[in-house]
Image 1 (tube, helix red, strand yellow):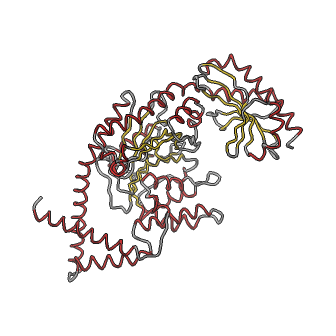
Image 2 (cartoon, one colour):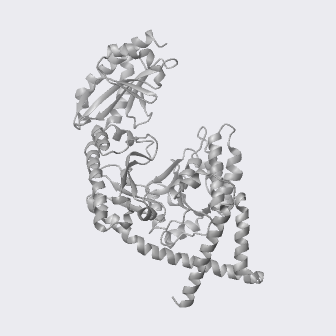
Image 3 (spheres, rainbow, N blue to C red):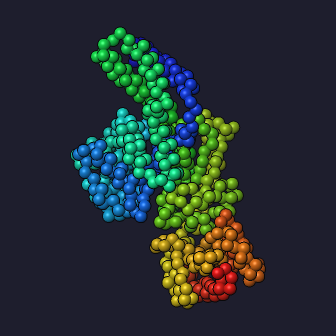
Length: 566
């Protein structure tokens, strides 16, 4: 780099700082603006979640927003042909198998990979190739796989590092690689198509979309309230660079300036990479050494990312995960969140298997993890915030302190991991047993029993009484106790706490020594448990006892609810 180049670079650095100060000074003069998304500093993951949440909007399985999005996509890309008529019951998933957004139709007529780069995250090595091959393994033909590369304003282009020529040619020749951006595609679609379609009573959806539109306009310098800033910035640039020049000269100067700044930014990124790589390598090495027999997944990126630690012999959708963990976090933060994370839990209900392992819950509480055990999709079963020594960012720690910090965290993670690996498969076969009970109990009681959820992965057996007045019912499911034995647990329960009072006195008289658990709207009266054994292979020996117990409970509840609660 010669002296002239250095002087030019220093000029641009100083000029950028000057413009930044002017922008901030003028911003202070504007009317007070409050936008939740501005304040939350949303990363790529947050933007992907917002987009997928909108695309998942449906009434009676009519995916109006998704179809609208696809129409817009085709209008903006005239050579693109997409089978919109094949949209029926799409699966719309966030971060499934590390793909930002994935939309798949059960018919396999199409799959859409969405790679979100709104915050200019770096393209990873063969990133889109991995995602493409992952979707192919789902049974989607190559010709039915579409890739959307979504950026802020269209200026970021996919690199051959992520999308090599072989796949690039295949996708582009078939018009299945689609470049979209928030400025020209998403923002106009939200403003002119989606917002006018919101129904009158859907206030929260409307409010959320208006906030998001305002946020995007702010990111893209399109807010009308900020027009005065734009005028002053334009004036400053004209005075400093363009005054006295012809239109052609001005265009040439700006074109050269843009190229110079892009090169300078890339130089900064290269140096930043040299600084951050050893820190990430340190985190990665300590983690891999702490889990030498366990696969890990390092996705620490610029402004967003995560680091996953998998479990041996367990579905990879269940894993421990540092999230969020980015380069910025490693250099600026001293608190890091570790979660036992469950991806895409709508079908397998792995979350509630974990919640029914007593030893896991007890050990997590001992380690002061927070235990939400949320039944939603893609959520944390448990999580904990870990703080570095003296609240110093990880990058600023010496190697010994880094090792000590992570090892102390991983001692707890390993203990929880071992419990899951040793107990999770004790539930194998519970779906078949619940389905079997759901078929046999109606014959014994002449009353309807059903499973929850109502598909092959059911884990809970349910019946209810007085549904139209003071609803109360019986539930039954399997759990693993602190001795790692599987047992059948049943409850008399109400789904609305206000229905409990009318039954409470008689139930306490009938079951004087049984624990009553009040959790929010729910109330559970715990009935005596029935031990099954080390796993469910002993079910046939205990089946009759469980059935008789449920039948006896049912007969009492039938009599009770016929006398009161109607």
